[in-house]
Image (cartoon, rainbow, N blue to C red; front, side, top):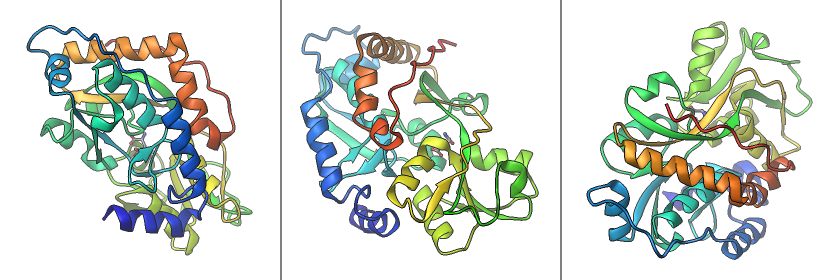
Length: 296
Ligand code: GLU
């Protein structure tokens, strides 16, 4: 299935950003050079999730597999991107090396249930923190703030400048995502087509099945970068999407730990370095100011 996804990514994004190419290989080499620090002197209170994971020496992390710049499978079928680097920083502070991480694909709609069912220990997957989701899981972070935007065919033949222009248009997003919910509730005139992953929306835009794709600007930027002669970004963000690390509801100590690790990475430059060698390469932008952690 992973191989198929890689082949699908090739078809959609072209070679350069498909995670099946020499460019992605270079990214792999880069990440290998800059591997997140692994803390070999960890000490955690007995019974905590941190103690359990660090004693086991391994962790299962949910991320995306088809989002260039944040989480995209490379030719070795290992995901790469900013989310993946953030996850490695957290694992490293649990004393766990990247090779001892099991990566599980979490799509937008199954993140809460994978956390609740213990299929993953935590999720780093362009995952917006919101009150609805907080009823089911907890969030550390935010570690980045994106905004919902729109991707259209190159040349913007429909003249779409913002969400109000989506009325009457076929618009693609992903089940269980906040952008889909925003369209459904605030722009009900748009005709929504939903898939499980965004690469399928990119396909639908290239074959004319939809006139627009909507989700977070940074995800769309990754899709545009893979096919710049096919797609363009409207570049008019209309929501705030603070990205958090999803974990089991009520695990306050684990949440505090992850928040501390994130804060340290903001302060010591590891976060900015992770940005520069992943998402920053695609957006062409320097690392922004890190957001303020919300210890709700
Ligand atoms: N950040 C949004 C969300 O969590 C959109 C991206 C995604 O679907 O992963 O729903």
